[in-house]
Length: 272
Length: 288
Image (cartoon, rainbow over all chains, first blue to last red; front, side, top):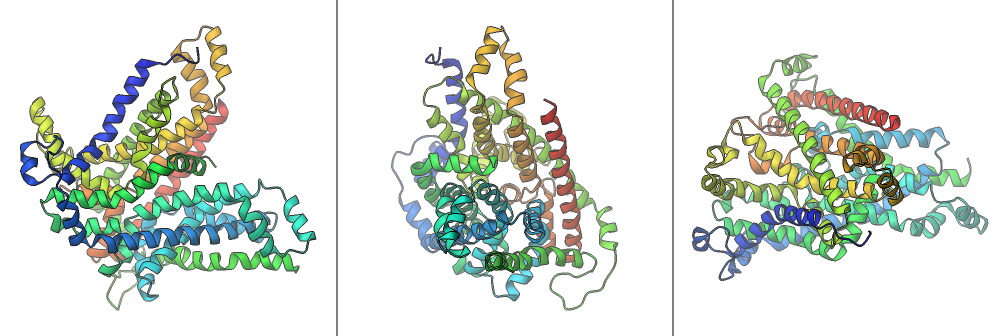
């Protein structure tokens, strides 16, 4: 009974994937065509590949600079988030019986209910007053805004780690800091993977925060570049789609290799 | 105080400071400005009490944005949950290449919402119209994003296309927690597929149903990127969401204080809805 394949369902599932893949097929083919081929047929596979769309898009949008900015912000946000958020969560998780830490826990996680627009207008004033309208500022803000959700996830996880290990380390004379970095942090690898993946996806794809924070063109991230260049892409769809595809490609490539990790990570983050 | 405890306190200090400065302080500032008439750049402003709030309730643009956002969020939440549950059931059935299909259905989740919006923007104006013309459906033979009455459906389609990915994976994770022995027992009892779903499957995945409903609702109430990429709030103000109105009015319209008041109301609305949803859905969970 276990081995019999349900073909009717499988065909439906396969047909459903066409709805997912169709826009991506269109993106890929349009990025490789020229306007003349577009008028012949929008749907057909291109007869000749117009790679120059990509080189034109690279040149026009300064792709490599935007890519470097996006990569820089994403990587530093992930690293900073993993190091700082887990540390706070550790202090909270091990002291939940104390009023101060319990209060702190609720103070942080209550921010999950605060919609971004309520702080959007003042944060721009604040960021420019503190000279944070750049990639460093963007990284710090991303890290702070991830705190609410991450504290929630981390505290739940750390509380499931038995105290015995830390007690043993204390007997051996380790400090609280040493215990955290050498005993607890390595044990948090699975949850760090989850948090890291979620932060990586949300930071790389974020549009609203860079839109309001970044003013200098040399600091534009990839999504922001697509927005800024809309006017200049105009009706040159081939150029525009080449640019869109290049902006999405790094994440797609990572996804191809780390698909299982990413799906598990995202699931764990939501179920916790 | 022991050395251990001191260390714990120090561990929280940087986060508390940063969190206060960049989260709590701006939120308080937003509330403060909502009682003024500041335009966002001038040097002077006055306190005007609750006048911004009073004006919000008679402003047709605000009413319009709330109406659109709620209509959008309710339709998107229902569609996403129904479709992703169906897909998850399909993926959980006895099919081959399950991981391959799962990988494809999840793909939209890793893509930039803004860029997906731009891609669909093109599809709506240049591709779906061809199908509309060929099929002779008048409403779809022109770009629906340019139609005041239909544009919101375009935004719904894009939000659903992308939103399904995440919810499907969660439902699938939920379905995989159900032991096969339960189904075997119900088969022996002669239960129909329909009964099996409502009596076994659905009650057992209800915690996942709760998370998915709350997340889908919250995400769609905050819709912004899709609006920018697809319609920019238009035609007219037909698809202007609350976030978009706050952004446009606050930064470009000189309505900094006024839109601050709007965002305070928006916060209260979202908080109430999230809490009600959690209460209601979790109450239902424990009944089962």
